[in-house]
Image 1: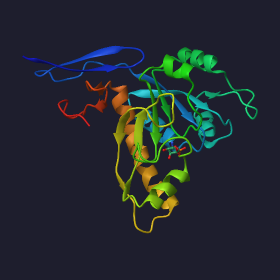
Image 2 (image 1 turned 90 degrees about the vertical axis):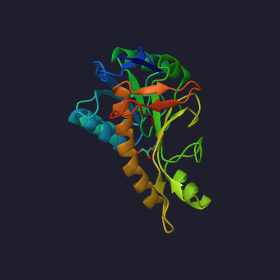
Image 3 (image 1 turned 90 degrees about the horizontal axis):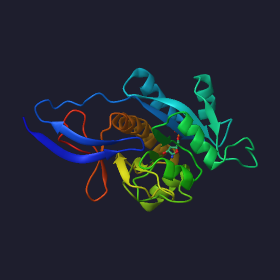
Image 4 (image 1 turned 120 degrees about the horizontal axis):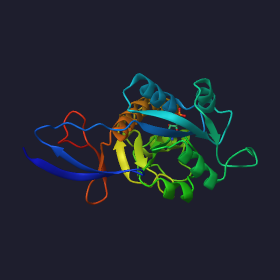
Length: 246
Ligand code: GRF
């Protein structure tokens, strides 16, 4: 029997030395993960992730929802499902919102392993990024690094893609750092841009793929299948074939 040493998989709570025996080739038991999802709008990505957790394709649970808009569709859905809703940040419109330090304390209290941004429009504060290294993710509706950064959100992204003449677009899931859309890319899916597309039509086609991609990536996260290449690029180890990465 030969052991193959691979790359390392890290998150905020543990450092897993990813050594797989070729003979056994099987993963050891993996703790069920606790997820926080952040939304500002309808929360269709949040719903599909929560559904996948309930149905069992994700080895985790959404234990708390964070929003800057208490009346948004995502917050409503969470309340209906009995998922606690936290307001962040504190603003004129939302005076009941938490400070950054309190948010970190609350998330620690919920024993959150990973934070998934799903249409959350506020910048993530440094306190949170420091408290959850390599554990915060975002989905963006274009193939980053194109059409990302401050001001590229919602239909603006899709309008810019169409105006550029790009023939392909699609969602990107990336690690979150202190700026908009600049963290390491973890996963992407290509979606064609059609000759007569409106921004709304392209957005709908991309959103369908977002739902699938975010569930696949969350499943990988919750099974400790994220690995880091020596140059700092994160990869996802295939579940079917542990020799393959994507
Ligand atoms: C998605 O297009 C996502 O890529 C972007 O915000 C949108 C959120 O949609 N970051 P929903 O609230 O999940 O429906």
